[in-house]
Structures are given as structure tokens and as C-alpha cells.
Length: 121
Image (cartoon, rainbow, N blue to C red; front, side):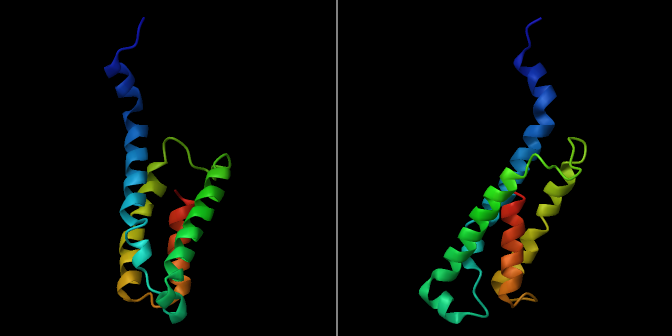
């Protein structure tokens, strides 16, 4: 019994949708908004352009760490994978507020948000 394209698609559509949502959220925030987050505590890092490099490096390092730890799923299964993926969409308003200096006017917030974004990629 040979599988057709549609029978395969019916089996994998959910996983493909989750991967698409995950990377859509990532590419919407990184690098466009992440590089726009100003440094509130170290203006010299902002003036010299190093702050965005620090945040991009943080994202990359924690992205690698998250990928290395994928075998430790921490309770995530195929049935509940949608929860952390949709929770990532909470990073949109948080990072936007950090960019605009609304509520989150400390570099620790920026580091936390970018770290979560990278680790959960």
C-alpha cells in the first residue's frame, strides 16, 4: 500500500504547523526587533553598536544550548507542544515594550526576553 501525498500530509500537518509557528515567531522578533532594543544601563554599548551584538550573541548561544538539551523534553509531548509555542507569542509585546522603553527599562529585561527567545527556539 503506497502512501499518497495527501495521506502523508494528513499525518504531519499538525507538526508542520507547529514548526511554522515556531519559526514565524522567531523570525518576526530576531533579528528585526532584537537589534532595536536599546541598552538602558550601558549607553556606551548602545553608542558603539555593541549592545545589539551582545543580544544577538546571547540569542545564538542559548539557541545552541536549547538545541543540545532537546532530548530533555521537560514534559513536552506531541499533544502539548502547542502550549510553549503559543507562549512564545507573549514575547511579542514584551520585546516591543522593551524596544519602546515601556515598563521594561532595564537591560536585565532585555537579556531575559532574548534569552527565552533563543533557548526556546
